[in-house]
Image 1 (spheres, rainbow, N blue to C red):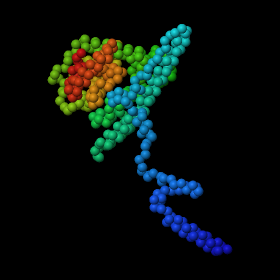
Image 2: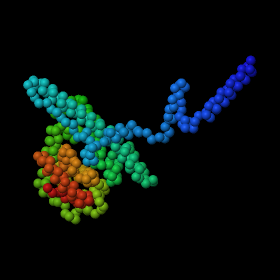
Image 3: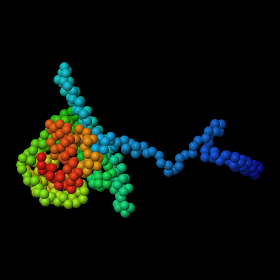
Image 4: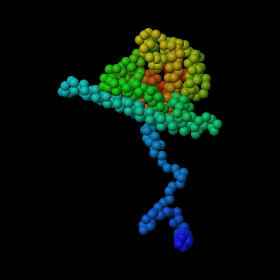
Length: 377
């Protein structure tokens, strides 16, 4: 029985294989690119799966692009600035209710400000990956690649000089680098003090992220900066002579840190102190205790700020000037360059900033124009 059963199975299998071979041979050529569903009654053709290496949209890349997308090449994301603070006006309600509503407004402001810091961090991380990929694509084969794990400052100069980002993206990365380190401590302060935090921030202004500064704090910091600036100009610090500052070199040489140090090394201690006061680069604690900050601290701070301004000026020139700057960004740009902003109309600020950018463009960023503007008013 076993032998008869085996032979019958072999015969059935051979007939099935022959029928299957004959069926395949009669499939038209134009139909062999389709497969069929398991339901033989419907017999509907379906397209074959895509090739293994087909290019399909990457949802992660689309999400990263949405995070960093801006409507202007010069204005960074609105999340890099403080959110609006809507304080209630006191009506006929009781004073405790008014205080409660005011506290709730401050709590909402700080919560939104912390959310902005985290949003900027995610956007900056996505932007860094794109910049690193662009830099590595332009490097020679034997050059070491740039790593995305490095800090922004490690490849900032190269990214600007190779024009792989615009001014809006540059400002996003710069402000994120300043704010993200303040997030843990300030977040803890928000949890501990809540709506009472405005009473504390005047004593720790430099520990507050830029997105969490209330308008009163911003105005107070500007008033102190402008008062220090006026005092420095009244002290009569000698302006550098024409041959004192080395200005030889290529275009926009001040975007390189080594060239900035070369330009500033010929300045005396009083001149460096003047630049630090104009650009607000040392803590006001030194002014309160009436002591001069260490020379190395002043030189390092002034060098970093002058190079930052050169990079920012270069990107503004590349974007076509300041005509598209928003009102908020105009004020910030003037303040960073030592231009007083309190009590000035927007047209006046535009004129002064345009004069700064024009002189930088004519000087081609070699350094003398910036030094001259910082010693004159």
